[in-house]
Each structure stands twice: as structure tokens, then as C-alpha cells.
Length: 252
Ligand code: ADE
Image 1 (cartoon, protein in one colour):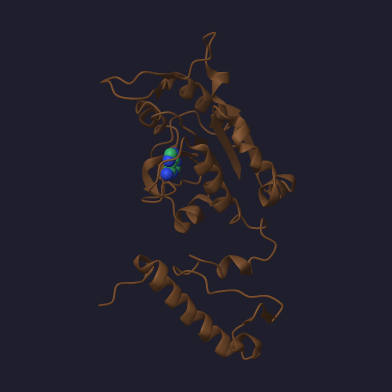
Image 2 (cartoon, helix red, strand yellow):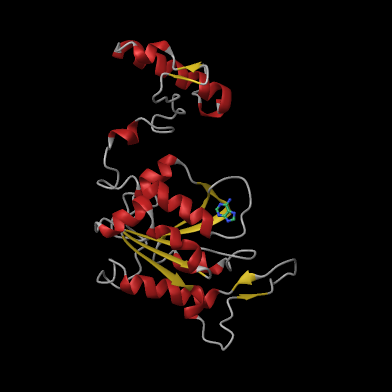
């Protein structure tokens, strides 16, 4: 997989050198590049923003640096040799991901919510591009223009407002990259975690069996795998009902 990130704060993305993502890059499972949007400006001040038409608080990101940057990442990405014609016809219906079309993720509190299912969907893509907006966001015409070249996905990581798309991009990249085959050593851990089966994960314990007056539940020491599996399932349902009842299937 190839990932390009475009930001006016490339240093924010330094964490992508670390841990599992850094290892995936070193192992050649992931080709990742971070680009400074200001490198695609043409004026002396490297201007990326301007006042909003219609008035209002804050600044809006100008469209031209984005068009230049997005064109540049298409020219160096894995799709560079693909046909030059705009790629708008071949998306898998409803998925937003086509085998030969790069996906442009625009992190935004006004986007569709990014979930584990979204991470699985995007983990199938050959090329992801993250456009990190700042200020009041990116001129709307950039997403329209980009739709001829990319599958455009405005995505939110939750119902709160961050100062820009960088932190959301870090969260999404981490959730996506760990699903790429070979990135996580023990793939079993991907099936036994929160959201893998639509429920929250059961509680986990390690040694010692007794700690500060608190004991690990007896069932986990029983060696009875059937009982352990049933107990874990009950804990998953109880925890999900208590913390995230919205995740439980509706009772008919
Ligand atoms: N940019 C600002 N807030 C955001 C959010 N909640 N999700 C994604 N991108 C954002």
C-alpha cells in the first residue's frame, strides 16, 4: 500500500516513523510519504489560506495549492503509470474503493464517521491520500475537482472538533495499517478485539492471579475453554450494553 499525507505541519506526522507503522514501512509493506502543502504554493509568503466568501470567522484553505499537491502525489504514487483519463467509472458500488482508483481521505468533523468497517474497506486500497485541512477547512471545490481522479471520502473520527486533520489522520492510518496482512505478528489478535465482531472486547487479565486484594475471575484459571468462551461472550454483551448500547442489535 502507498499512503501520501499532505499537511502544513508535516512534523505532526513524525509518529508515523514509530512502532508498528515504522516497522511496516521498514519491511516494505507500506510506502508512506508526508508532503508540506506550502511546497505547492507559488507566492513569496507561501500562502495557503484566505478569507471566506460570504463572511464569517476564520480562514479557508485556498484551492490551488491543494490541486498542485494532489496532482503531484498522483504523479509519484503507484497509480502514476495508469491511464491518464479521469477514473470516475470503475468504483465498486457503495464502497468508495476501486482497485485502480486512489482514495482521497479528507478528515473533517463534517465527514461520515470512520469506523472499524471503514478501516477494513480502506485497508484494501492500493493508494490512500490524506488531505489535512486546517483553519475552517479546504475550499469545497477541491473535493469536487478531485472526484474525477480519486474516490473522495470526507471522514470524521468522532463528534468533536480538532484543530486540523493531522491527529485524525494519525488515528485513521494506524487503524488501517494494522489490518494490512503481515503488519501484526499474530493475526488472531485482530479477531479478538473490540469492534471485530461488532461488540466491545471482554476484560483481560495477566499475572499475578491476585493483586492488591483483587483476584482474576476463577473461570479464567479453570482451563475449561468452553466455559471461558461463554464467560467472555457474556462479558462482551454486558460491557457493550453498559457502555455502548447503540452497538447492540435491535431486539425485535
Ligand atoms: N478535523 C477536525 N475535527 C475532526 C474530526 N472530528 N474528525 C476528523 N477530522 C477533523
